[in-house]
Length: 496
Ligand code: AMP
Image 1 (cartoon, rainbow, N blue to C red):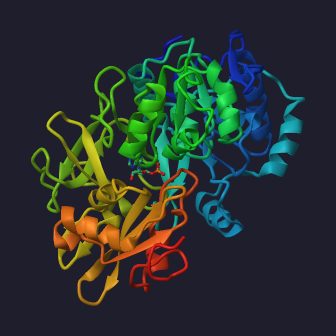
Image 2 (image 1 turned 90 degrees about the vertical axis):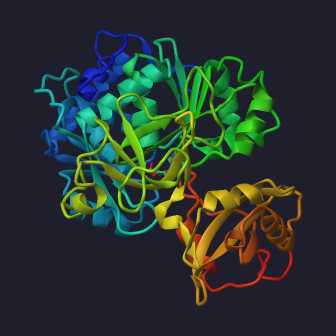
């Protein structure tokens, strides 16, 4: 059932077929929630129900709902009928939803209540669907993304964008029909919706479909699973669970991490505990996946691997000229996976794409001699202190190595002297005490003076969004006017 090099999602997801009785979704105990034939019937009913509410090919269907099997059926209905899905983060406020709805003008907006009512209407509708299939350049989805600042913009993703990327990943990561994927990610984001779900369906594999990540439930489900995809937080939470060991992972062939940087220390600890080297990959909403550590071959901790087959990745200086191997610069990408632009924001085509068609990711990184990409931060998180560039990751790596440090985030805050001052926000390991003075001393020993944090703040936890990304903008606001070396209470020293 291998779907390779598909041009449309309908081709890629051909396993969703009324005659295909294999299991599609399982619960944590392995009970079948839905077969592929069941998914074909239910998504057909949903396609009809949405049509009854005005949906037509090319029209937007927006959805802000809790993760559920029904929500996944809405996705499949849109794929099959050619409606453009607009999934919304469950954390969006009413004001943010209003902005998105005003911008995208969907014909249907589903919330939990209307999902239930229209779902009930769908029960009486035909389980067969006969439609004119969407073409490769038709839009399949609009995903709003803002990075950490600015109003969300809608990334327009075509059928080909999504299908080509999922086919590449399914092949690269060795998916087969027998695979069972552990799915604990949200389905409003590219990771859970497209990477995890499409890789599964592309081969008619199954997935254990969990509402959310709960370490106990994941441990219960894991013995039935062969692949797990997660954000770094999933892996740190598993490592914090006393029951998590090599035996718990005996049936798993592959752990994949992405959406935020996986600390090298977590990679090593995971390997020691389970024998598994987590495969880290890199991508973004606008482009789907871009690079991946290999399935066979060396997985380098702290790197996101070489570019995917068919995807071009280059690192350029401020003039757009490609830099030499090993040098740091802006990451630009090109390929069939790269989105078609931002919805109703044509002016951004000139700033976000180069004249020769490369998309500026906003990430900063470098290639090593073996062609593995190392990310050093987002360009907007770059700290420029006294005119010199400080890459947060380099300083964070030094701090994270210190005894008693769990993790850190390095930011720039306005400084009258230097333009920006380097500030480190540090979280101590459980039971440990971190003295900010020690952090600065250690940094001074290992880093050039301009990279040494001027201020160190010890906090209980770093603010993270739903995908596990550290919200540096929030840290910049919080620590903009705080000087000195403080603990959470603002007092001197590392008191916690
Ligand atoms: P999103 O559009 O929400 O998927 O966010 C995309 C951004 O997440 C990228 O531009 C990167 O900054 C970051 N990102 C994704 N995967 C990784 C990774 N493996 N390591 C570091 N950053 C990552």
